[in-house]
Image 1 (cartoon, rainbow, N blue to C red):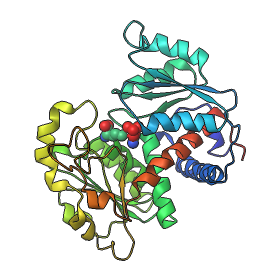
Image 2: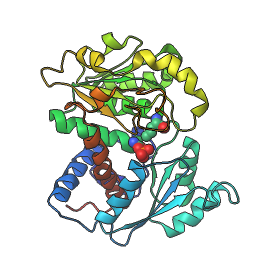
Image 3: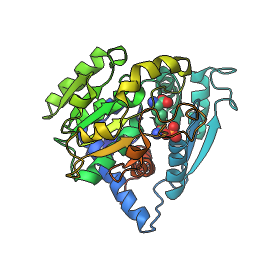
Image 4: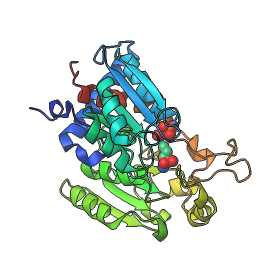
Length: 333
Ligand code: CP
Ligand code: NVA
């Protein structure tokens, strides 16, 4: 059985769950779905499949990507706001999982605890996809890797530098994704926000075995030297709103601005891209930033030709489609 076939019936709870071959296989499949969609071709790999989307936190991209991807392939998605269902309040998560697993062919979950998505997978009996928890965001990183590969034609050997809140879901999962792909990954973050040492060790071993590397830095201008991708995310993740002032204080020196992009030494040669999972605080046009202006990235970087953030956002739909098709068992291109 090849590695893509082995995904059939399985969940995607964290990126570590995927073999290297399955990770690249999903990116290849997503690229093929993207090509087909561009040509106006829709398939029926998810025909008669219904997927449930349980969301405890808000979402624009992930929610819509699951819905559009299912629809493109002939399936349907039902959005289940946590406040509209009994999940974990009037009914245990295990009971809700057993009920929903009898109705849906697959379930996406976005929320706080990693344990919740794992419980869902244990009890539902159907593939469960992690649509973001406090710990990780695997479907995001599949889209990021596809985007980087589109820009450079390869992944292995490239240098990716994440600058910002180094212990959030996106930073954690990007570290694993880059390590698995044999890339050189630097997590540049204040000491107070450094990623968990055991995760770093695992990622570092993984990267070393594949010709890559993982490092933690506290010096942005030094860390980004030679970077092919500079990646950032919000300074305050969903659920951490009480930390707002503290994070502003810690992370201001880690803002991605034009000076930092220039410090890569790769702007002129066209050898660096800027990435952000979005939503981004790059100007004063949001409720949060009206008073304080840009936070993790300045507007000139966000809008620069080397910024690939909207390709990255679009790629959420193609990669999520690949995940659903591969795990629900319909890969036949
Ligand atoms: N990047 C991402 O997950 O975006 P949403 O929160 O809009 O889903
Ligand atoms: N780290 C961010 C990612 C949003 C897609 C959050 O959890 O809010």
